Image 1 (spheres, helix red, strand yellow):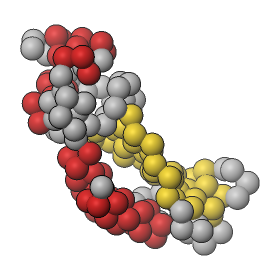
Image 2 (cartoon, helix red, strand yellow; image 1 turned 60 degrees about the horizontal axis):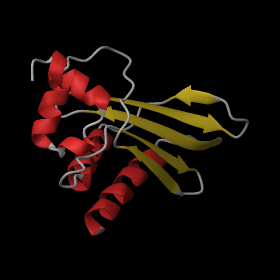
Image 3 (cartoon, one colour; image 1 turned 120 degrees about the vertical axis):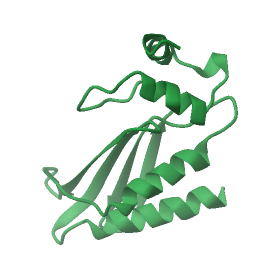
Image 4 (cartoon, helix red, strand yellow; image 1 turned 180 degrees about the vertical axis):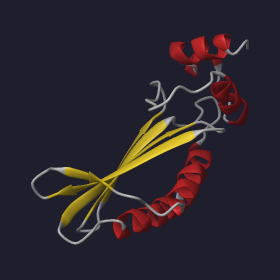
Length: 139
């Protein structure tokens, strides 16, 4: 899909620009719901060691756009994703549509309710962990 490709290219350029000289790649991880998200970015040296790095805040906007663009009726959209950009300029991405995202802080179950309202899923595509979160929120 053209929209996704364009968003990924823009995100990839931002991530590429965060790779310092002497580093091999950047790993950008996202966990997201409509009201709350979390991102981490680490650059890797050739020897495999990592250092945290700040990434231009526009990357957050592009991941939000990408979540919206990748929503599919019945299936919903992804909850977490990983993007790896190498110093050679290649981009690899993976998307998690079904497993509970990991957070460095607790999030309120109502965040998942809001996410389902914005990105609905059919009943058969709501994982058990998500059903529990909705129930905890009183939904």
